[in-house]
Image (cartoon, rainbow, N blue to C red; front, side, top):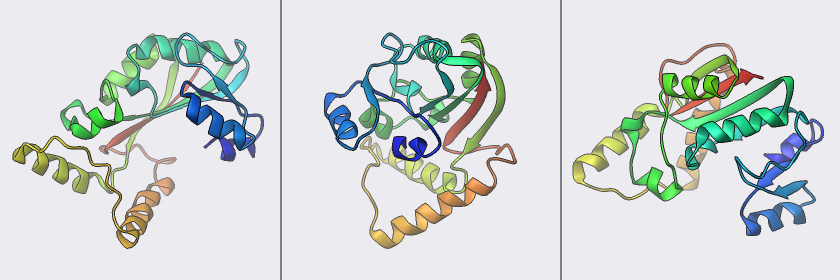
Length: 189
């Protein structure tokens, strides 16, 4: 992600993991040691855009993290957040990934607004694959299987799933989707 962002302008990544930090720096990226909410790596008001893509669900205090991200943004700056949807969707997959929570639309809106943002857009995504994901999760729950879903499918199936997931890139910018395995929020400082 940081590689793609550097094509758009100055981009700074924040990483708490030393091994990942070393990899990013070796690739010539501006990655700095830090973690939300306490170790913000840029000056207040430095950023035009802050991306928290599958981040806040891993943190003990999502509100404090969102407030810290707000300090990094200039007035009028944009926040993009993605998180896993639906607390009832909780499974061994979430445990394996270190999630602390999943979100509803209302819950995500509430915490983002409490942090001082104005929500511009809030939509589900990963809707095309949602029925398949929900079926697998429900089947595993009925069987008492609490293992994660981190197995990568074979190349042909993976390519098909990637294409199906990518179809939404044409819809998400123009419509609010009523369901999906994840949520996307755009807010303004």
